[in-house]
Length: 85
Image (cartoon, rainbow, N blue to C red; front, side):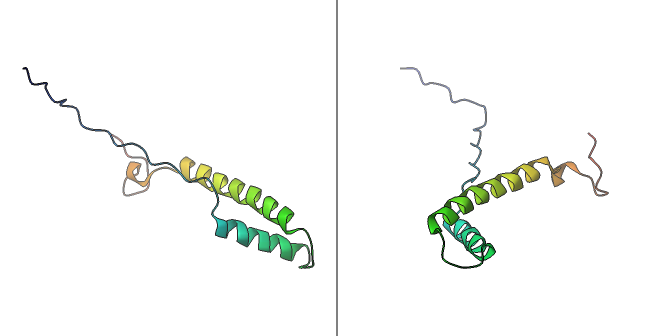
């Protein structure tokens, strides 16, 4: 039987998934702020939670988009200018 040759190409790493879902703690904190914004009185806790969940997810997406538009520090030289090859 013939042996098969191993591929000389390097193994590529799979990119890590980016978390875009807010954590329970992030939602709870935002829901609490919504509760305080409406005066801290009795209200609809489920509505506060739903609103907080939506807002927290939007905030995370906004932060990720802002991070993706910033230049990578690896591409800058010591003076902060884009590196040239």
